[in-house]
Length: 113
Length: 115
Image (cartoon, rainbow over all chains, first blue to last red):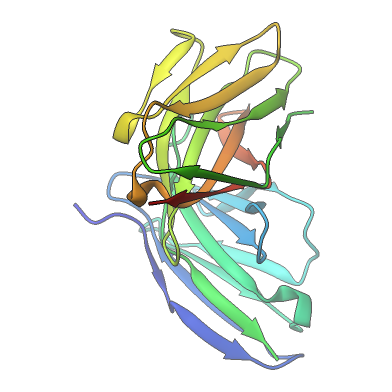
């Protein structure tokens, strides 16, 4: 049973560019959440998708957007990259309404130069 | 609003000695609480979770945590540290709103284990 998979694992961009990160949830899960983990900090909630719609959003600017596809996979897009966007981006999947754990992928490490 | 505070950013222990990682939480209602572990260059793995059942929760790899409402604490313990326990540990509170589960992480505690 495949867990949460993310791609790419590492990438380097320059300021002003755009990036797309991808996530496939754990089999049977229908909800995808994205978190940003800056170096030395705990993960911060970006947003959550269910039924192809953004359902919750954290304190992130509109430069951060996402999408969920009918197969429950998801993308995170970041426009007009800033140096401060350098971080590990984690995708987590769960089942709608479940108060239990979220299953995390290993993340995509983004470096903005 | 929910929040968690991890009281130590770094903890260092010797192999075979007890581990204590401290966490205080703030929640306007009965919370769901978790401990996650993150090994270098790895994703987050659930150690244990509290969801209003038994206050003493047992997790994987010999870890356990006790929910103390009067102290608003959820400290993580292990009787005997192993070298493989060296990692970053996060105390997490869950906010469930309209069926959507959002996790709020503490800043993390880095555990070092020395021979």
